[in-house]
Length: 482
Image (cartoon, rainbow, N blue to C red; front, side, top):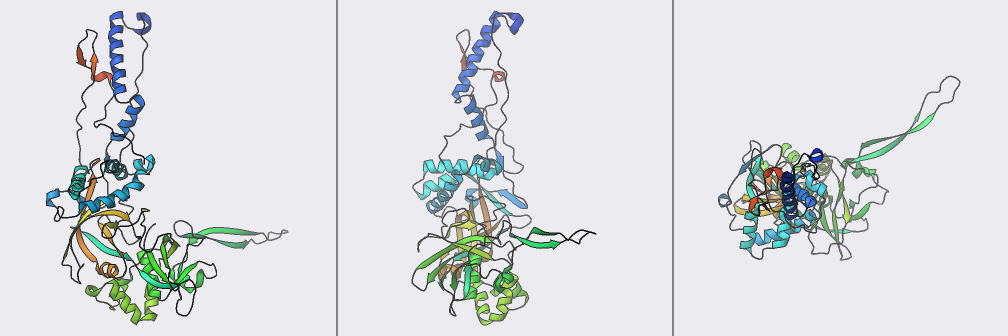
């Protein structure tokens, strides 16, 4: 991200023939006037002093800093599958992320160096809009550097998958449809807190009456068990009801859902809020209790076990205290779900990442073998993804969740993924890597006309530090899942 530079203060001195006032002789005054003219011309060539200060701020370099990560600069030619990917499709996904990036504020760009550097690349992307896969690939290679990233002391990253379920439901509760999906309660505060009040009566002092006062304090919001036991009943929060509580549970994990109502209409729900309790993967408990073998663990195996063991399944689900609230959207039946960046996700291209470490819009090239075509991880997977979403379980510098779209087929693929994979982060050229020092090349000095009428370069002492690159024109400009 570009940062504001501190402009050097320079004092302007008046010119007069009186040496007692200025310290200049007549000849010196002439030479000084010529140099001032040259300085003014130089500043005008940068668009004026104000424009120069702004452009200097735009060219200050940021540094990539990601805690608990190891970074290794690599080469495009060393990335398996890079040249075979559909870069035009990947560019379209990246361009979609550029819209919110370009609408961001200068404060946002100053706060996170990656955001500011992506802003500069997005301006170029909007201007250039490469029309072919070859041109799109050239764009990425010209504006980014490939940096392999993983957690410290780990060789690779880790990837899972998610999707948007399509389930049946009703607006009205019944014996058939009894598992509710709820909207956000008004009393849910940021950070998963709520206000509780209680009345406190102090002991009366001698000769005086007892005093009563109301005390308000913030406490953690209700967990999954409390909500399922009725903590929110009677508040009219139910958006709809699903047939199966397992469907409701997995809709919360995925963060969005398409509900085919009993009247034939399609209801689209998206993540709105979360109760503040940490996400717990129920699969781990099923493995520890030896209900499912580790090598057989998948979303499908969890579903099957829960269907066969409804009573214990209820207890297992409550071990995940996290609870997600939804909102109704205006999406049509065919529109893709909206991610945490606020834009529609792209199947097979959108990636959920740790939002505390990464900036939405950052491209990542994932390379490895995954269980796409079957249960075994034998399908080559080499794709350029774009960070557009997040999730409570997505923690770490090389931890990703691939969005596969909607429906059963997407769910089957997403449910099988829990595999290591190589992460290559595309780092904008405007960022320096840790430990990297760049020496910028000086810009050509503007020419001034000397008193003798000969061209010569203006002295370095007369000009402020110059930006090292030519400034570009300005462009107009959830937690997601648990």
